[in-house]
Length: 267
Image (cartoon, rainbow, N blue to C red; front, side, top):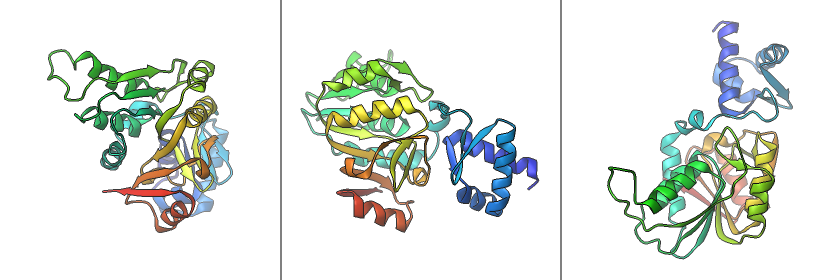
């Protein structure tokens, strides 16, 4: 692979994921870590990304992949995770959903269940809220009627991010007085330090959502492990359950089992 092609691939990985580690890129491209570091230096000098300890992030502290870019990634794993997570929801619960494509899949699974009477939903995710609003309105025009009973939905308000999350002071204030039974947290990245996102405002709103919950369930596919966003929003002691897929490495799985009450491998 020519240097120009390699750098284009590196830039693509960083832009789609929001960040990438040197050793992951080296393994992906079958080159040395030193070669990747030289490429990252060149790309940073061109203003195309920002080097950080151990890797690089998309240029600009607030940049993150758009929702549409992420929605097709690891679709099968996300669907399995969503199916497993939906089983935790019970009739009469108040349930929070963070932003992200995995939580949207989860919302779609929840709205398919016919037994979830009297469900209250809190979310800062526009796509997830729309999924529940569509159900409450009686389905899409001209389409079949939804099978799930309508849910009460509170959309937080706030400023919209590229990942279709609503964040900022308005969202944080809406969450401050709420108490939900269960919150599902998607994430840009997960590593031994916890969960993270490229967007500091989204991190603050995620913290507010976590504070509102009795139980916190982190839902992420195995490709997120080892990714680190600019802003952390949860250490592992704030997470009660992790639901992920079978692609997680043995060391990562053991770390989670040692630090989280319950780990579910969706299959």
